[in-house]
Length: 243
Ligand code: MG
Image 1: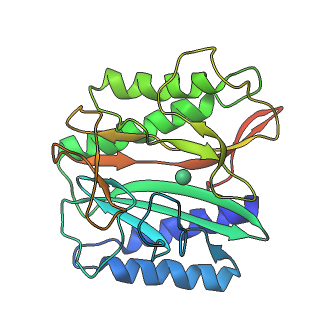
Image 2: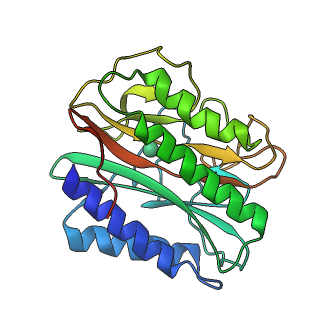
């Protein structure tokens, strides 16, 4: 999973660096697909077809701009300065998956956008810090929600993280809200994808677009999304998707 995580981390960095004004979303997807091939890995997203989706996922990246929260399909549109781009990416290497996401500013974003990005990254860090033996699943959600609520941001209900290993999505589901000391005890060997999504408008609802995949805010406000694949070890959390 470390090797899968390394491929995810380096690819995310390359895609983020290429996400400049005028760049087509499909070009970023091609870049990630080339990286996957060069690494001898497999996309976890391409062809993924959960029960609720009308069609299999057609790309290797999810590229969600501004009010799109997650799962947006790359198309031919070009990035514009000031947009918030959320990049979600996962691969399978030697039968094991790793999954991560970042939100980056396209050129310069306004202060509010920057604050949304920084706060969502901080919410992820807070969640990761609790992913250690002796904690429970509710501690992760509580840590994430505490950062989100202190800043007045919303958290879309029903969207969250997951266990990960031989499948991209495994039990348990990792809520971005929770009560401290409640839920599954975290034990060494458990690997979780922790992924806060915060919305600028402060609402907790979301809607799914006509393509059956794109999840967006209802009020049109912007969203940010950060994710890491994190192993619970005797020595504490180990982030597998950090370069
Ligand atoms: Mg995930």
